[in-house]
Amino acid sequence: MTTKEPLKGRAARLGKLMPSGPSTAARTPFVLLVVVLLGGGLITLLLLNSALNQGSFKLRDLKNRTTELTDEEQALQRDVDDRSAPDALERRARELGMVPGGSPAFLSPDGKVLGEPSKAAAPEPTRTPAAPRTAPPAATGAPAGQPPATPGKTATPGTTATPGKTETPRTTPPAPTNSGR
Image (cartoon, rainbow, N blue to C red; front, side, top):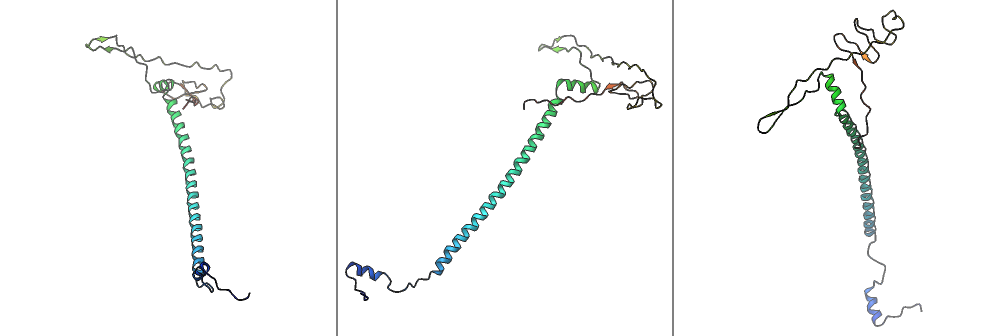
């Protein structure tokens, strides 16, 4: 059975379609095409991954900046709220020399004046009582840790003595509160 038997019928027809000898088609271009496609796909995937990572870093930086700006906005809003509180406005108005207004008068639609207008009265300057001295002043004329007093004025702790001005107590701004914003 070393010799080949001829094929008959349908097998013979199919056998004619198959090449009888070694393949003449070159495999090298196909292999190169597959390698180039795989390499190109990997490089494209690498570039896409790098672009996504760079975008995520930029997104994180922008989120951090947004958080910082939001915190700064909230701090500024607290400052505005503190300064626009009625007691703070009154204190600043008094520091500027403003006084509360007198009783107002109103005009009715027919032109009649309702109420008695009055002039705003300047409040009496308040004086702080001088602290009694129990010991004679030091050689510099002022207690240790205190600025020297101006002649005719007594500087008490927490006040400033300036020539020609009324002593005003030093106040610290109110502590910030949480306004619920």
